[in-house]
Length: 415
Figure 1: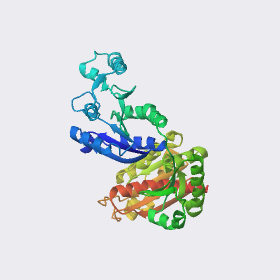
Figure 2 (figure 1 turned 180 degrees about the vertical axis):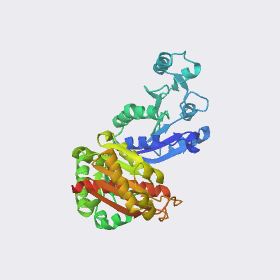
Figure 3 (figure 1 turned 90 degrees about the vertical axis):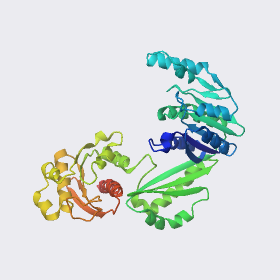
Figure 4 (figure 1 turned 180 degrees about the horizontal axis):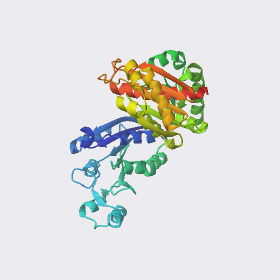
């Protein structure tokens, strides 16, 4: 089965908003064995919409469209789909009742004609009830293609996908199983990993595919298998993961996209009943932000100090003026004093510090742009490592965050 996702809205095309709907829909379709062949973003233009629908007709099994179902004149999706299917709009009593209850009951004002028009749907459409808003979803089939139109508001779209669309797709279509497993690795580049696992990759079963998903400081390896027996697919992937562990087990920190290193580290800190704090300069608080993005981080994260300016390092973290003068603010000595100080201030078991030149300018140090020092303190063990992450600035910051978390993770596992 193949699906296409079409987002409608000029606001997407001019970069005013980011299309997160397509990513969500694609993940939900993948879970039920439907492959997404393409994603498109098109304008709120009648000709463009009609052309898109015509191009996908009978080439794609399912077309999911989001956007353009609002009550204003610039929202033309409903009327255009109606025209494409040679249909007419009729008023849905069930939708109208829901709109009245929402507008008059929740917003405490009389329903207007614009609100009432939200209850107009193509006569050939099956209405997908939108509990979260006034615009209903619509399910129409023309020849060999199912067209599903949903509101673009993310929380309304998600409700309809989970509660209306996915159950209907599962009921209507026979689908293969698609099984994924994502292995999270840190501390080694994509090309080096590829060299280490080349023979293993070349000997994967034909129904298992490997994808490399690199980002600064980490590489995800996604194994995907497709077939008719879900249990056999899962076993085959698990067998290959065992082989992979023998090759690069030293850099594997977890599995699946939902388990990034900050989540894995959080579980370890919780299980070992350890607390952590951060003192950040070049990363500007991003390590603390990453740690606290995990639900339940309050159990182990005590706090962080963003000592971006040299004066803050001196006054808040008590880094000695002598060390800064002799070694420079971007140095092993300063990173060490920072990590020891924040560990003492926050009274934690573990601490991280960063100081570096993220660029493009050198700031208060003559250290080469891209130079970063990461300090780690765990109980009585303190060490600092130096890196050069090159440029651009964003890459330096992201790689520093990932490297700091990786260093803590590996050090804790030694204990």
